[in-house]
Image (cartoon, rainbow, N blue to C red; front, side, top):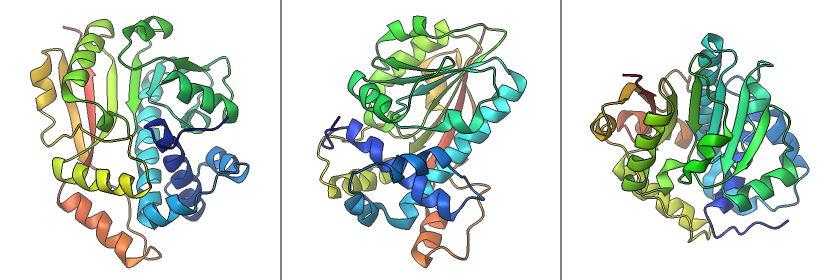
Length: 272
């Protein structure tokens, strides 16, 4: 099956490439065996993506995956039978790295993205795909939710593509339906978002414009009394800068954190 690269789904291949190439060189940050195997067996030409995103791009993808992995592992240590909903899953391979044998995992994405995903990554009894829009709240009924077991939603490189009013509405709906649930995602500042849009356009992709940014995470608490900000930390916090990286990569990592261009936001839907 072919994938339209002039679309949001077209960007699915970029983080897959990034995790495969960068994790081979930086296994101390993340080793994504499944991504490496998929890329090795994929006949798509990644030359243009590699040229555009380079070493820094790959590093940013494995750091994001590492932060998501760490958050999930900490959550399922407390809630070993939790449900994990991977919003805008694309070709994500997180389940293969974090599965504890008892969690229920859901890959939520648009029908064409899930159809493409299934050509490369098969579902299994506890790793299930849901072919629906994030904004189609009928997916709420497709996931197992038990308050005692907990539920964690993760979104990596997804919310950028949505308008603020869309996210506000769905976050409010989720806070009512999933009390005690938690949500972890990455975000950029307004300044960084402009740079990202220019970078994606360089790949020839004109159909994946990004809109949503976060300068101050406290805005989420204004959206609903049930939304609480647990943390907001700089993107590369806790990740050692390697001397083997190109000088440009080392500079970018420091600048991104210094200017608060990228961050991870962690929210909880309060039970009250």
